[in-house]
Image (cartoon, rainbow, N blue to C red; front, side, top):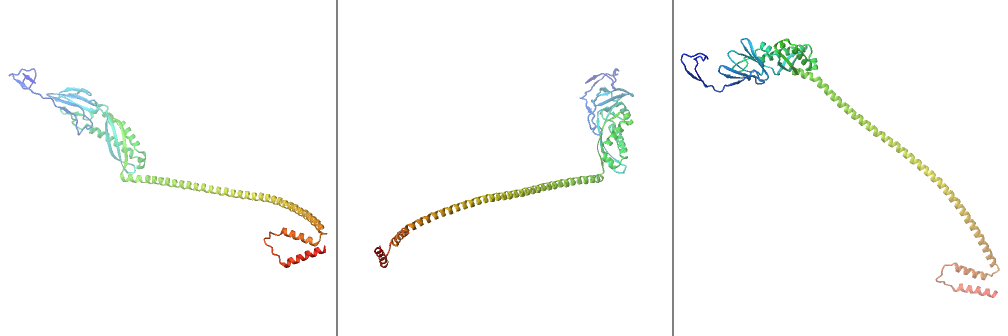
Length: 379
C-alpha cells in the first residue's frame, strides 16, 4: 500500500508544510483466536483480526458479545461480527451455552460422620447483560482473551451454593439414613436450592440440571457398613443352601418312601399271589382227589364187576369142565385099566415136551410087555 501526502502525525485533511511521500507495506493481518487454556477449556470464542488502528471481531454462535463505548452499550448480541477501535472499545464476551461443572466436596452427618458427595451441575447464562454487570467478562481487544477468570467465579459461586444446600441437608440426618436415602434427597436439595437462589437469578445464571453421582462415607466406615449386609447376604445364601439341601433330602426321603411303599405293595401282592396259588393248588388237589376217588371208585366197581364176571366165568367154566370131566369119567368107567393106561400114556405123550432121545431099559420093556401080554390073556 502506498500513501502520498499527509503530515508526520498522519492526520487526514491537513496539508503538511513540506510535501513528502510515505510508503507503508502491510502484510497479512495476524488473527488471534480466543482460546485461553487456563480459563476456557471447553471451546473457542471470538476471533479478533488486527489491522492498523482498527480491529475486527467475529463472534461464535454460543457467545454473547458486547461493545461498550463511553459507558454506553454500542453493540450486543450472540454471534456478532463488527469493526471497532481498540483504544476506545470495551468488549465483553459471555458464553451462553450449557456448561458442566463437576463437584466433589465433604459433608458431615448428624452423627458426626464424614461423607463425600460427587455431583455435576449443568448451568447456562440466561441474562448476559446481568452477568457482565456482576462478573468481569471483559476481553483484551488485541488477543481476545479474558482479562480475568469469569468462569472460575461462576464455578465458585455455584460450588459454594451447592455445597451449602447439601451440607444443610446431610447435617439433619444420620449416616444410616443418608446411605439409605441415596443420592435422591441430596440431588433434590441442591436442585431446589439453586433454583431458588436469588444471587444466581440476579447474576443471570440458571441451573439446567443437577446430577449427584455418589454419596459415600469414609472407606473404613463404608467397610463397616457393608459388613452386616454382607453377613446377611451370606446368611441368606447359607439359608438357601440349607433349604436346598433340606428339599433334596426331603425329596430323597419321599423317593425312598415311595420305593419302600412300592416294595411293600409288591410283597403284599406277591403274598396274595402265593396265597392264590396255594388256594389254586389246594383246589386243584381237591379236585384231583375227588376225580381220583371217582376214578378209583369207578375202577373198583369195574374191577369188582370184572372179578365177578371172571369168577362167574370161572365157575361156569369149572362147572362145564366138571361136567365134561364127569362125562368123560363116566365114559371111562367101563373101560379097562389097560386102555386107560394107554390113553393116559398117549395124553402124557401129547403133553410132554419134544423128546429127542428116549432110552428104554430092558426091565421096563419086559415089565410093559409082561403086563401087556397078561392083559391080552385075561381078555
